[in-house]
Image (cartoon, rainbow over all chains, first blue to last red; front, side, top):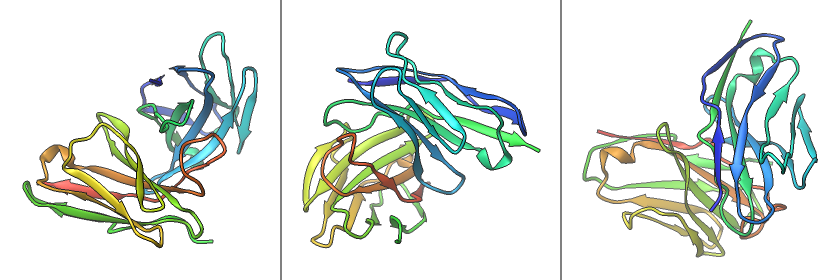
Amino acid sequence: GNSVTQMEGPVTLSEEAFLTINCTYTATGYPSLFWYVQYPGEGLQLLLKATKADDKGSNKGFEATYRKETTSFHLEKGSVQVSDSAVYFCAPHSGNTPLVFGKGTRLSVIA
Amino acid sequence: KAGVTQTPRYLIKTRGQQVTLSCSPISGHRSVSWYQQTPGQGLQFLFEYFSETQRNKGNFPGRFSGRQFSNSRSEMNVSTLELGDSALYLCASSLAAGFDFYNEQFFGPGTRLTVL
């Protein structure tokens, strides 16, 4: 089955700093790749996705590029804001099987 | 339109008791999935229901069960609670059955269950 390894948090950054959250995966077949975000007290929301190699998913200033050769889907943002403080989950998906989530990386952005 | 709602939001039970959690999907969504979220194990899939039928099941003991009603609302039940069942239980709804890429799941805020 699919599995994913995310960098352990928490990650603490100052406002306007550059963010990278690493994600590597193993998957059967040719997976689609997702990043989900969980804001405090809320459920998960889809942040961005990519379906094939070299695709770049982007949303709200966040980007991630599907790297098939390194089986990675690292999340980046050039300038984080306090409102980006949340837990971020990487999830590969292939076939008609449930999403498998990483353990999540907690991001805290301080003003 | 209204999102996925879950009730109750917080629950405290003691070992050995049973609990029922409720999930109302987004209007028009017919699939409901349940997940358990814990600090140690992260997010783990429990089961998926579509048209009142369980379609997929995760690797959880039989104490965990669920059902779906004709209006797509779903409940999950945990019997004989154990301390390790303390978790955030998330429900997600989607338009169709299964986990195809195009079938985006929308998550509720969760029910926080504490077992004492």
